[in-house]
Amino acid sequence: MASHSSSHAQAGGASSALRSTNFGSDITRWTDTPFHLTGLEKYVELDQDAQFIGKQALREIRDGDLLDRKLVGIEIGGDPMTDEGALNDFWPLVEGDATVGRVTAGAWSPRLEKNIGYGWVPIRREEPGSELEADTPRGRVPVRVAHLPFLDPNKDVPKS
Image (cartoon, rainbow, N blue to C red; front, side, top):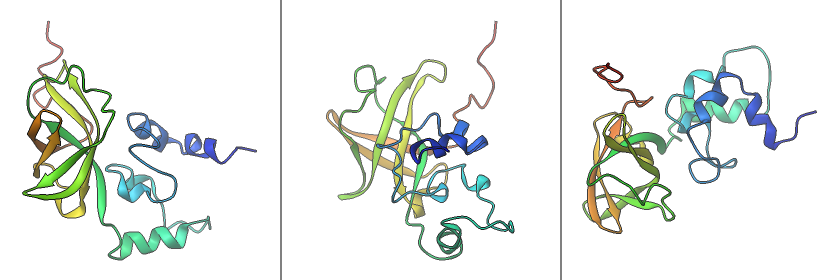
């Protein structure tokens, strides 16, 4: 019998989508659902006949007005992140003077030639292209919600 902590690994395709997120800082067991994580909604099959624990709660989140935030991919402006990649402290995401979310992970992508990461944003800012700012130890930098997975849209890499 699988332990409670290993049940996440048995979620089939969902486990591969979770490999780039960090359980504990990006997502938690008690407050986050697949509807909170960009791209995992497609793995929730609430219309199946089978019953499972949490099915009704997930249905209420999907059909109601309960989804208040989303973990999204982000592009982080500023100089290449060379020493902040681990993000020992979450960076606040701000709109004007209001903190509206947080950056949970970030690093320089040599392949994409930009800083990328993950952040929790209000549901009204989940769409790719939405712009916020991150309050970093070096000052504010622009943040833009990105399409996931992070890809080179023009397929310039690799080229020989």
